[in-house]
Each structure stands twice: as C-alpha cells, then as structure tokens.
Length: 193
Image (spheres, rainbow, N blue to C red):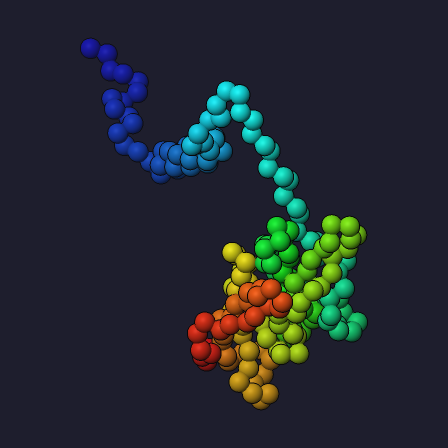
C-alpha cells in the first residue's frame, strides 16, 4: 500500500492562519450583506384607477456657511462645533441649531447656541434666537434636536474662581418653541461634576 503525500485529515489541525482566513471571510460576508437589504414594505398597494400624489420635496435646512453669528471672537475665527436640524416651530420648514465658539488655541472657549432660519426668498440664513449666550461661560455637550425640542447638557462653573479648564456644574436643558419664543426648561436640578 502506498502512503499518501498529504497526511490524512490535514485540515483537522487548524493553525492561526486558518482562523484568520475564516474570520476575514465571515466579516466580508456580513459587510456585504448590509449593503443588500430588501426595500421597505408597503402596507397597501394603490388600486387601479386611483392616483397617488407625490410628496413635496423636503426643504433643506439652513446652512451654517456665511452666517453672521452674534459672537465676538476678535482676531480668531468662529467655529461651528455641532449642528442639527429640525422643524422647531411646526411650519413645515426645518431650522438649523448650531453650537458655535471662537476657535481658540488655548483653553476651552464658551459655546453659543443659535437657531437659524431662512425664508424661501432669502439668499442667506439668519440667526433668529440665541439659546445659550457665550457670556454665560457654558460648554455644550450631548446636543440633539428631535420632535421640535432642542436638548443639551451644559457644563458650567459654580463661581468665577473655578478655572475655565474645569467646569464643575452640569445641567441638562431643553428648549421648545411656544409660538412666540423658545422656552427653556431644566428637567433635573444642577449637580456638581
């Protein structure tokens, strides 16, 4: 009987390279499968003889480019660090809410939070409300716009003696349009960081 050149059941002794090749293949299959998903299901198909009206194109939210924010940065530029859009006043046109501060090379500059809108016939957006004034020395984190509400976590200072690097007070705040102005509410009491 002649012996085989390849040992019997050579694949039963896996090496790290075998596991790496298998893991790479599985990762590739998962990645590719996320690209090929079925379309959204429709609850009812139109019946013969009925027409469906196309939905109007969504209006684009105002851009933050070229906006004159009410922020005095001196020789440095303004920097939009966060932005989100949503229909805050219920008119069917989205507004943009921007978190802006001076592009300072040192320290943590305070943030301003501004609401932007743009009329249909306007060429540039404009600031219509200031939700957080940079003079309040607050830093904005966890910023969202959803269901007509602006929500943010605000980091601040318990006194002027607290260094700018190290805010020691944390508040969660929300703003909602009441038909005339944005009303701020603070869901939970301020607490130290």
